[in-house]
Image (cartoon, rainbow, N blue to C red; front, top):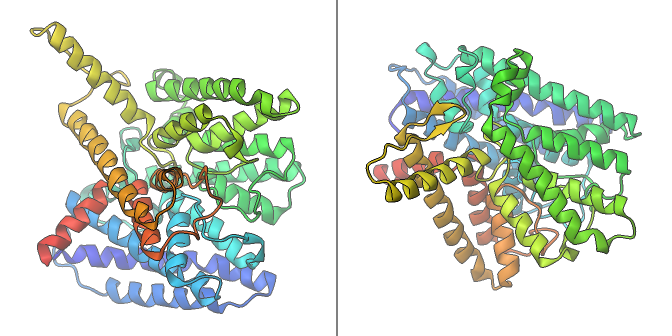
Length: 473
């Protein structure tokens, strides 16, 4: 990590983050709450950012490795700063605050608070606002405003923070692409706020629900999540969770009127079919648990949408679901939605590539002399990408096992341990056996926080960072 551009760009990120922290401070003024919990981290972020930004860059060349390191370090530093409002306001210890902050920024939605209604409005806003920032990524915000380097090398950072996103193939300019993405992100948000307010939800509540929905986050300001709202509100939230799970490339293609390209999207087809099948499957198995079919279908639609998009909202106790439903939902939790969306998890695109590789390998055994080509979205897939996909699957599985083993030291049941690790690593946050994560030890919370970062950044950036740290020790 000798390249000074890494530290310089982290400085830019921290300056941008300090600007973003002005919004919860405005909420403090409106709600007449103390500014101190937010002013101190704002000042820390700004000062460190300015100092790092003063570093003179001699070599402006940015490599793929540097992009991974910038993203990893930025997310870790931002998480540590984001924990301060909880700690300074005395609503949590620092480790608990870090867990809550990482959960917010990675759009996981797991919480350490037993009763969120005791939190001041500014902290409730901060939890949902962290989702909103993390949904697209604070680095993408910086890149949309500040050019990182010449010759579009900033794509290395974008690819590290938004893995699987190939928007550059649709919009050649990185900056224009990011502005389009944010325009879409904000448009979805404004639409949801509008529809929620039609359902008689207050502006402030609509804002918080929306920031947690379009980011597929899941933290709420009520202990029962979305359960106390009307059927209309539940269906609107379910709809926007589903829309947020779509690859944002699809929306760009829609705006550009490239309907044929949308119809050719394998990922979108699988996403929609899996979504419909999952709703039918869950409904058939839970319909006898509810007094009427309408409640059962709303519960099925909502929870499938919530878990499949790694959001984590709920409209009731899913622990009453039959075992087969909970196992199936755990599968959806891991797979998640589309690449290029705000969701966590393994992603449908990778699942499709895994299936096609298995199919190709089987055909090779049957017909050894045949040439088997893997195509995805109508284009030939390079063997390098196939190998990378297999490596990701291997690392994903190994890390799940390692984190589960570490968290199991706390001595909780197999079900609680497994569900907690799966819900954090997949960035879903909704856990089958527990309502909050305060029961775990500080060490387990740190490990699961790392798991959330690994899940959000899709492993490779964090692995590259630790590899570089090991080299420099």
